[in-house]
Image 1 (tube, rainbow over the protein chains, first blue to last red):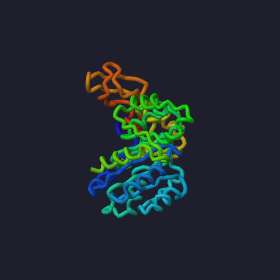
Image 2: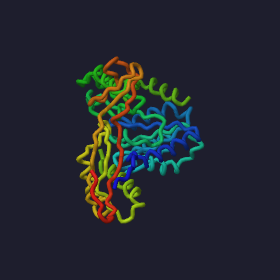
Image 3: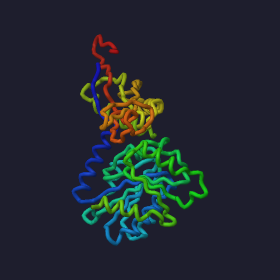
Image 4: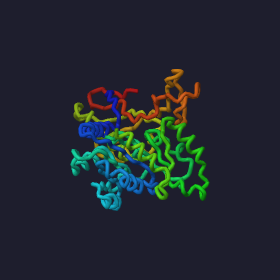
Length: 214
Length: 123
């Protein structure tokens, strides 16, 4: 006999993510889910972001990695509350991990929560965690063909940071083709070329966040 | 994609849905998997087979409908189906489009054998 089910397989996660978002909204916290390959510059970007914003905004960070607490330690060194989630093998953070993690924070004193997801261009795009926006960082050293190879992540992101632009003179990276492909996959994507190393483009990134916080 | 995580979530749903039908075995599960979801049907079958061993869905087959990417243009109102994940209307080049198909990761129905006398397999 046939039993009709009609369910999203990832529904359980969607429900938890929805509950997370509800809690964040109640507490007035803007949540950013930062994704990108390993080595794209996620943690360094966060360090630069914190340096620029910590005097005016109450920030907290959740770090997702398979192993080690290195990233959380880097963030904590800036005087910002940082929680490390070690997935032990899972390639992305999910709603449940974040729900458990936020219990460590005093949510009444946070305005901006940035969740640095596990380095991965595939899976984090599929799992909501209760964020307001997804941000993606990709470095010029990864090649300009990524938007068409990993379309989902480009599609679900509100903003895309192209990092390490200081290395462009040494790379065969076609910036125009990259941007045009990215916009084909997501015409509404805001693309920000930056260099965490030289600081170029960072003011536009900070402005983007400040706009979202309003 | 970590199909084993998805297979696990799928199994949890199946085990939940089959509860009212005590003593039943799941024979077949119909899924819809969207093109852009990144899930590989064969990998999902492999993971599902491994994880369902010994349980109520042991031996169940997965019937997977692969859903192409479909976009609806809010400018010219046309719907287009394609393999490419471009969010641009191929008719009018408009960018006010929404993806109406291709992101699915759904279970639609399951076929169960409740062991009653004379029960037959339905197509």
